Image (cartoon, rainbow, N blue to C red; front, side):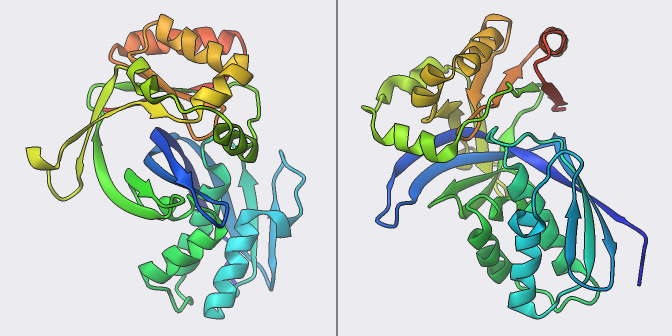
Amino acid sequence: MNNTATILTAPAKVNLYLKIVGKREDGYHELDTLFLPFPALADTLAITEKAEGCSIHCEDFDLPAEDNLIYKAWDKYAQATGFRPGLHIELTKKTPTGAGLGGGSSDAATMLRFLNSHPHSPGMEHEALNALAAGLGADVPFFLLDGPAWAKGIGEILTPCEVDLSGLTALLVCPDVHVNTAWAYKAWSGVVRTENLQKTNPFYLTTFDSSNNKASSKTRVTLFNDFEQVVLPEFSVIRQTKEFLLKNGANGAVMSGSGASIISFFKDRTLAQKVSSELKADNVPSVIHYFS
């Protein structure tokens, strides 16, 4: 038995574009969304082997292992393959919950990748692993990829792409408020659609096919999130955070997922650093990521 810990990181994600297409008969909502990994913010999994079972310890959360997505990933993989290694996971949480950043889903995908690459694992083909991941959560399959992707369906139909972020500095801000995703969907279902909302974010990014950088594969995308029309009026701190970013030099800003985090982009790196410092002075968590 190897007692040396394997250290893995589980990066957050942000949604640069999120449109709710409609609601299915099974109650799930279909989306058209653009996922971007955000490696500057990540949980850490320190995995060590033990005799049997799967145990998880996290200083910041008192959650039964069986209710954790990491455990569920381990258990579902064992059911699918018969491979059930004894593991203990020390989880260090950096990605806040209820922020629209996919922290739990990323943790689960990291566990699946670890199990599938284990030298004693029979392994699963990508399609089967993707289906298993989708059973854990709609955005878990995205975290099996290594880059941006367009997602459709409930988030599980993925098309890898590239996003031109050259020369930009991203500033991710996480207000200390929790937005319940189920509430956000219910609230969205009860409002009149605001088709002109996209026009309030006149900042565009260019996406293109991962294997084709020709002009024909390029698409201009505005930062957009359907949830903003119900979340921002209800949660003033999120609305004020976005307004603060745009008034202080951000070239674009948009809420990620159902909130509460806001991802913003600056063309001026020094200005982004200044705004981040001001936010931290007010005890508002923020994370900077530089794109070359």
